[in-house]
Image (cartoon, rainbow, N blue to C red; front, side, top):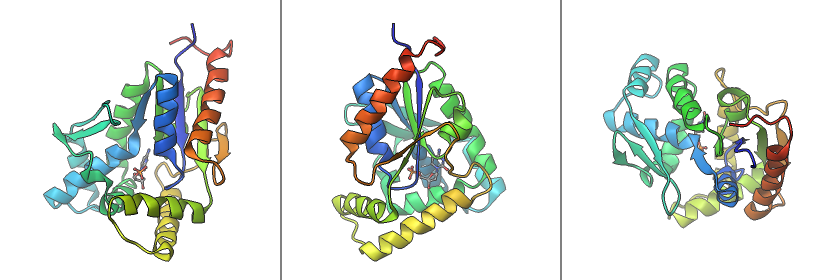
Length: 231
Ligand code: DC
Protein backbone atom coordinates (compact mmCIF):
# COMPACT_ATOMS: atom_id res chain seq x y z
CA UNK A 1 0.00 0.00 0.00
CA UNK A 2 1.04 3.56 -0.63
CA UNK A 3 2.06 5.33 2.55
CA UNK A 4 0.15 8.34 3.81
CA UNK A 5 2.72 11.08 4.06
CA UNK A 6 2.79 14.59 5.50
CA UNK A 7 3.02 17.38 2.92
CA UNK A 8 4.11 20.77 4.22
CA UNK A 9 3.44 23.77 1.98
CA UNK A 10 4.92 27.06 3.12
CA UNK A 11 5.12 30.34 1.32
CA UNK A 12 4.42 34.05 1.42
CA UNK A 13 1.07 35.75 1.25
CA UNK A 14 -0.59 35.46 -2.16
CA UNK A 15 1.61 32.60 -3.36
CA UNK A 16 -1.50 30.50 -3.95
CA UNK A 17 -0.87 28.16 -1.02
CA UNK A 18 -4.51 27.72 -0.08
CA UNK A 19 -5.83 26.95 -3.55
CA UNK A 20 -2.90 24.69 -4.32
CA UNK A 21 -2.93 22.88 -0.96
CA UNK A 22 -6.68 22.28 -1.21
CA UNK A 23 -6.31 20.84 -4.70
CA UNK A 24 -3.35 18.64 -3.75
CA UNK A 25 -5.38 17.21 -0.86
CA UNK A 26 -8.31 16.59 -3.19
CA UNK A 27 -6.18 14.81 -5.79
CA UNK A 28 -4.54 12.57 -3.18
CA UNK A 29 -7.57 12.00 -0.95
CA UNK A 30 -5.74 13.72 1.90
CA UNK A 31 -6.96 16.21 4.50
CA UNK A 32 -6.22 19.88 3.84
CA UNK A 33 -5.25 21.85 6.93
CA UNK A 34 -4.90 25.62 6.78
CA UNK A 35 -2.78 26.73 9.73
CA UNK A 36 -3.22 30.42 8.86
CA UNK A 37 -6.92 30.03 9.58
CA UNK A 38 -6.02 29.26 13.18
CA UNK A 39 -4.05 32.49 13.57
CA UNK A 40 -6.93 34.38 11.97
CA UNK A 41 -9.40 32.72 14.34
CA UNK A 42 -7.43 33.85 17.38
CA UNK A 43 -7.22 37.33 15.85
CA UNK A 44 -11.01 37.48 15.47
CA UNK A 45 -11.58 36.48 19.07
CA UNK A 46 -9.05 39.03 20.31
CA UNK A 47 -10.65 41.84 18.29
CA UNK A 48 -14.11 40.94 19.54
CA UNK A 49 -12.95 40.85 23.13
CA UNK A 50 -11.01 44.05 22.70
CA UNK A 51 -7.72 42.43 23.70
CA UNK A 52 -4.78 44.39 22.36
CA UNK A 53 -2.83 42.34 19.81
CA UNK A 54 0.51 43.39 21.23
CA UNK A 55 -0.34 42.58 24.84
CA UNK A 56 1.70 39.36 24.99
CA UNK A 57 0.44 38.18 28.38
CA UNK A 58 -3.22 38.74 27.56
CA UNK A 59 -2.84 37.18 24.11
CA UNK A 60 -1.09 34.13 25.57
CA UNK A 61 -3.95 33.67 28.01
CA UNK A 62 -6.52 34.13 25.28
CA UNK A 63 -4.84 31.60 22.98
CA UNK A 64 -4.64 29.05 25.79
CA UNK A 65 -8.36 29.42 26.53
CA UNK A 66 -9.59 29.24 22.94
CA UNK A 67 -10.85 26.09 21.27
CA UNK A 68 -10.16 26.05 17.55
CA UNK A 69 -11.48 23.41 15.19
CA UNK A 70 -10.97 22.82 11.48
CA UNK A 71 -13.89 20.78 10.23
CA UNK A 72 -13.70 19.25 6.74
CA UNK A 73 -16.77 20.15 4.68
CA UNK A 74 -18.28 20.04 1.20
CA UNK A 75 -17.06 23.49 0.14
CA UNK A 76 -13.73 23.38 1.92
CA UNK A 77 -12.99 23.24 5.63
CA UNK A 78 -15.02 25.19 8.17
CA UNK A 79 -13.27 27.02 10.98
CA UNK A 80 -14.80 27.12 14.44
CA UNK A 81 -13.83 29.16 17.45
CA UNK A 82 -15.26 27.93 20.76
CA UNK A 83 -17.94 26.15 18.74
CA UNK A 84 -18.91 29.11 16.54
CA UNK A 85 -18.44 28.96 12.76
CA UNK A 86 -16.25 31.92 11.75
CA UNK A 87 -15.14 30.68 8.30
CA UNK A 88 -16.32 33.73 6.39
CA UNK A 89 -15.43 36.37 8.95
CA UNK A 90 -11.77 35.48 9.25
CA UNK A 91 -11.15 36.16 5.53
CA UNK A 92 -11.26 39.95 5.75
CA UNK A 93 -8.15 42.08 5.17
CA UNK A 94 -8.41 43.23 8.81
CA UNK A 95 -8.13 39.66 10.10
CA UNK A 96 -5.26 38.98 7.74
CA UNK A 97 -3.39 41.95 9.14
CA UNK A 98 -4.28 41.14 12.74
CA UNK A 99 -3.22 37.50 12.35
CA UNK A 100 0.14 38.55 11.01
CA UNK A 101 0.52 40.88 13.99
CA UNK A 102 -0.22 38.32 16.71
CA UNK A 103 1.75 35.58 14.94
CA UNK A 104 4.93 37.15 16.35
CA UNK A 105 3.95 36.04 19.86
CA UNK A 106 5.51 32.83 21.15
CA UNK A 107 2.63 32.35 23.60
CA UNK A 108 0.15 32.36 20.73
CA UNK A 109 2.19 30.11 18.45
CA UNK A 110 2.90 27.41 21.02
CA UNK A 111 -0.64 26.05 21.52
CA UNK A 112 -1.39 26.41 17.80
CA UNK A 113 1.72 24.48 16.80
CA UNK A 114 0.74 21.72 19.27
CA UNK A 115 -2.73 21.57 17.79
CA UNK A 116 -1.33 21.44 14.26
CA UNK A 117 1.04 18.63 15.22
CA UNK A 118 -1.76 16.60 16.77
CA UNK A 119 -3.81 16.94 13.59
CA UNK A 120 -1.05 15.63 11.34
CA UNK A 121 0.57 12.73 13.15
CA UNK A 122 -1.42 10.06 11.31
CA UNK A 123 -0.21 11.36 7.93
CA UNK A 124 -2.38 11.88 4.88
CA UNK A 125 -2.41 15.63 5.39
CA UNK A 126 -1.50 18.69 3.37
CA UNK A 127 -0.76 21.48 5.81
CA UNK A 128 -0.09 25.00 4.63
CA UNK A 129 1.43 27.93 6.49
CA UNK A 130 4.71 29.70 7.14
CA UNK A 131 6.59 27.36 9.49
CA UNK A 132 5.15 23.95 8.69
CA UNK A 133 8.29 22.46 7.14
CA UNK A 134 10.63 24.26 9.52
CA UNK A 135 8.88 24.00 12.91
CA UNK A 136 5.58 22.09 12.92
CA UNK A 137 6.61 19.06 10.85
CA UNK A 138 10.38 19.09 10.37
CA UNK A 139 9.97 15.37 9.63
CA UNK A 140 7.46 15.90 6.80
CA UNK A 141 8.22 13.61 3.88
CA UNK A 142 7.55 16.38 1.37
CA UNK A 143 8.19 20.08 1.96
CA UNK A 144 7.32 22.64 -0.65
CA UNK A 145 8.13 26.32 -0.59
CA UNK A 146 5.61 27.94 -2.89
CA UNK A 147 6.59 31.34 -4.20
CA UNK A 148 5.71 33.90 -6.87
CA UNK A 149 6.83 37.42 -7.69
CA UNK A 150 5.54 40.27 -5.52
CA UNK A 151 3.64 41.74 -8.49
CA UNK A 152 1.93 38.47 -9.33
CA UNK A 153 1.01 37.86 -5.68
CA UNK A 154 -0.45 41.35 -5.44
CA UNK A 155 -2.54 40.71 -8.57
CA UNK A 156 -3.86 37.44 -7.12
CA UNK A 157 -4.76 39.00 -3.79
CA UNK A 158 -6.44 41.89 -5.54
CA UNK A 159 -8.61 39.49 -7.54
CA UNK A 160 -9.51 37.60 -4.36
CA UNK A 161 -10.50 40.80 -2.60
CA UNK A 162 -12.55 41.98 -5.59
CA UNK A 163 -14.54 38.76 -5.47
CA UNK A 164 -15.44 39.61 -1.92
CA UNK A 165 -16.29 43.18 -2.81
CA UNK A 166 -13.21 44.76 -1.22
CA UNK A 167 -11.79 47.48 -3.48
CA UNK A 168 -8.12 48.37 -3.32
CA UNK A 169 -5.69 49.77 -5.86
CA UNK A 170 -2.92 47.64 -7.33
CA UNK A 171 -0.27 49.99 -5.89
CA UNK A 172 -1.83 49.72 -2.45
CA UNK A 173 -1.81 45.95 -2.69
CA UNK A 174 1.84 45.78 -3.75
CA UNK A 175 2.67 47.84 -0.68
CA UNK A 176 0.55 45.60 1.54
CA UNK A 177 2.18 42.42 0.19
CA UNK A 178 5.64 43.91 0.75
CA UNK A 179 4.73 44.89 4.32
CA UNK A 180 3.34 41.42 5.03
CA UNK A 181 6.49 39.77 3.64
CA UNK A 182 8.61 41.95 5.84
CA UNK A 183 6.63 41.06 8.96
CA UNK A 184 6.37 37.33 8.19
CA UNK A 185 10.06 36.91 7.34
CA UNK A 186 11.43 39.43 9.81
CA UNK A 187 9.88 38.23 13.05
CA UNK A 188 12.03 36.51 15.65
CA UNK A 189 9.82 33.53 16.38
CA UNK A 190 9.39 31.02 13.54
CA UNK A 191 9.90 33.45 10.67
CA UNK A 192 8.77 32.48 7.21
CA UNK A 193 11.75 30.81 5.66
CA UNK A 194 12.45 28.07 3.23
CA UNK A 195 13.45 24.84 5.00
CA UNK A 196 16.75 23.57 3.61
CA UNK A 197 15.14 20.41 2.33
CA UNK A 198 12.08 22.13 0.85
CA UNK A 199 11.45 21.99 -2.88
CA UNK A 200 11.29 25.54 -4.20
CA UNK A 201 8.32 25.98 -6.54
CA UNK A 202 8.05 29.34 -8.25
CA UNK A 203 4.50 29.49 -9.58
CA UNK A 204 4.61 33.02 -11.02
CA UNK A 205 3.89 31.59 -14.45
CA UNK A 206 1.87 28.57 -13.32
CA UNK A 207 -1.78 28.34 -12.50
CA UNK A 208 -2.95 26.56 -9.34
CA UNK A 209 -3.80 23.36 -11.19
CA UNK A 210 -0.31 23.09 -12.68
CA UNK A 211 1.33 23.72 -9.32
CA UNK A 212 -0.96 21.19 -7.62
CA UNK A 213 -0.20 18.49 -10.17
CA UNK A 214 3.51 19.11 -9.86
CA UNK A 215 3.27 18.69 -6.08
CA UNK A 216 1.14 15.56 -6.42
CA UNK A 217 3.81 14.07 -8.65
CA UNK A 218 6.48 14.83 -6.03
CA UNK A 219 4.24 13.42 -3.29
CA UNK A 220 3.64 10.15 -5.16
CA UNK A 221 7.38 9.74 -5.63
CA UNK A 222 7.97 10.35 -1.91
CA UNK A 223 5.22 8.01 -0.82
CA UNK A 224 6.76 5.23 -2.89
CA UNK A 225 10.27 5.79 -1.59
CA UNK A 226 11.58 2.67 0.21
CA UNK A 227 12.83 4.65 3.20
CA UNK A 228 9.53 6.38 3.86
CA UNK A 229 8.13 5.39 7.24
CA UNK A 230 4.85 3.54 7.31
CA UNK A 231 2.39 5.40 9.51
O1 DC B 1 -1.89 32.15 5.43
P1 DC B 1 -2.68 33.29 6.00
O2 DC B 1 -2.59 34.55 5.21
O3 DC B 1 -4.11 32.90 6.28
O4 DC B 1 -2.03 33.59 7.44
C1 DC B 1 -2.38 34.71 8.20
C2 DC B 1 -1.21 35.14 9.07
O5 DC B 1 -0.94 34.14 10.05
C3 DC B 1 0.10 35.36 8.33
O6 DC B 1 0.34 36.71 8.04
C4 DC B 1 1.17 34.85 9.26
C5 DC B 1 0.46 33.96 10.23
N1 DC B 1 0.80 32.54 10.10
C6 DC B 1 1.92 32.10 10.75
O7 DC B 1 2.61 32.89 11.39
N2 DC B 1 2.26 30.78 10.73
C7 DC B 1 1.53 29.91 10.02
N3 DC B 1 1.88 28.61 10.01
C8 DC B 1 0.40 30.35 9.29
C9 DC B 1 0.07 31.69 9.35
